[in-house]
Amino acid sequence: MKVQKISQFQHHLAFNFLDNNFEVFHSRFLKSDLGKIYQAIPWGTMAKSLKIKKHSKGPDTIFSPQGKIALMILKHYTGVSDRKLIEQLNGNIEYQYFCDIYLGTNRIENYKIVSQIRTELSKHLHIDDLQKVMYQHWKDYIANPSHIVMDATCYESELRYPTNQKLLWESVDWLYQEMKLICKALKIKLPRTKYNKWKIKYISYSKMRKKTKKKKIPLTRALLHLLNKLNGLLDEIEKNKNIEFTERYHQRRAIIRKIYLQQKELFETGKSPKNRIVSIHKSYIRPIVRGKEKKPVEFGAKVNKVQIDGINFIEHLNFNAFNEGVRFISSIYFAQSLTGIKTRIAGADAIYATNKNRVFATSNQILTDFKPKGKQGKHHKEKKQARKIIQKERATRLEGSFGKEKEYYHLKKVKARTKKNEILWIFFGIHTANALEIGRRMTKKQQLVA
Image 1 (cartoon, rainbow, N blue to C red):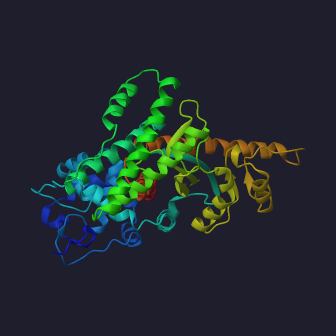
Image 2 (image 1 turned 90 degrees about the horizontal axis):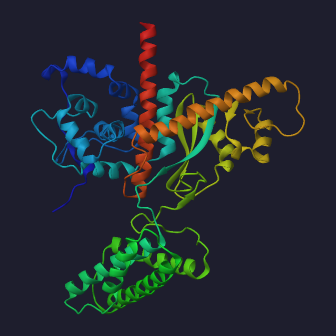
């Protein structure tokens, strides 16, 4: 039987206001914050950019192309889990209108549909193209596009705090459980290991309030030895037995081999290896040293953002640590390609104030808030006053938006399970906040005209 992708299903549960007499709900909905977001989103062009097609043939699907995008936005607007999102959608007429779906007496029982749609959309997400679509739709409500501010932040991934011992034990445990399943399937005897002995010792170690160096070193050495042995045993079984494994199995094995080599190097030399893996489930996550007092190291995607009149755009997103100071020139070019207007004012913190960036800004007649070097020139008092205004804009509006997105738009901990899904999660979190701001500006403009 041919299995059809969720993207190929046809949509049939659409709203019909005339038939169902929903005009009152419709007018009330448009006045709400969710209604403002609804009016601010360019649904058609976004669906086209994300390559979501409406199919007339095939099994029924619940959500239309617009509904799939709306469900992702609603996820960040409500800030709830996938299960609770579907539960609320089942009983909220405004949520149903937002998602272009009328359930009536029906209920959605498949709570995994949110993650299925997220996976579908993440395959076709091109951030730059989609942001250009959104800017073109919003440009009438964005003042002073030649004035920008920029800064970087980290959107942390949902991840247990990694330690070397946790990582080694997770690798050992995964290999052992896989070996048990393989031996059971092949009906062969399970090779002898000291897994049970070190399981008891690891549990005892993990319960200790103070994990001393005296306890860490022998445990780490033993786990490295056990991990190497299990890798060897599985290699031997794979070589001698005629059995096919899934792609996911081979990927996980490759990750664990790399973890063994990295942890061995770290144990023997004391130096942290390059591209250090901190999770077997999210091997793309890297430690990002931010230097904060309460949180010196963060684990997630680092994003360099450009803000134009309070609206944030992603200039660069990477799971590896990068120095945002080198992104000044690319941020200027990014803003100019987005707006089609030459940048005249650029605000950035001290890390961006390199000699190269200063020369670029001066040669392109871009006013910055960089602290000047050397002797002050003419009009230094006016320039100082202008720098203060730019600094205030960056320090309040831009940095304030980081906290707002994390606290109110589900970006405090990114709970997606794959790299592409995490990027999509961050994208929709940022632009849900943008859409609400644009929607409020639209409403304000309509009231002034009226």
